[in-house]
Length: 137
Image (cartoon, rainbow, N blue to C red):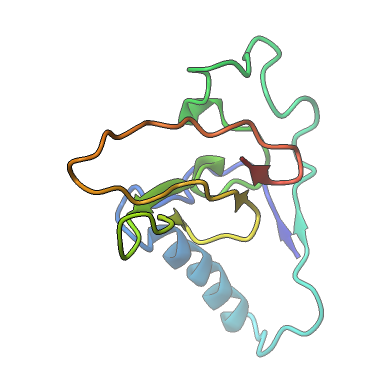
């Protein structure tokens, strides 16, 4: 079992892969304590903090999605944020590619990005608010 206490240092600020290195270090501690193999489920206990995950004064409106307004929890990886990379598809009209860093299945992005020729007008599209189940339109 991993018991969280709100360490804000599990992130990639030191460079790509830094968060994973911290977690790998936790695994090495387990190995030093004689853990050879984990079978079953890894349990992460995030009950150290009780109460609201967001400050009641933080609004959900446009402009209020700053990284420092991410939900508060006792187990936090990369500030409870992901980076989103958008790259063009293979040809004009092809779907664009959305990737998250770190890669995750906790968030499902509805991809409505299409690739346009360099001479075409570009439009910025804001992401919608999550439906609570991890889907962001």
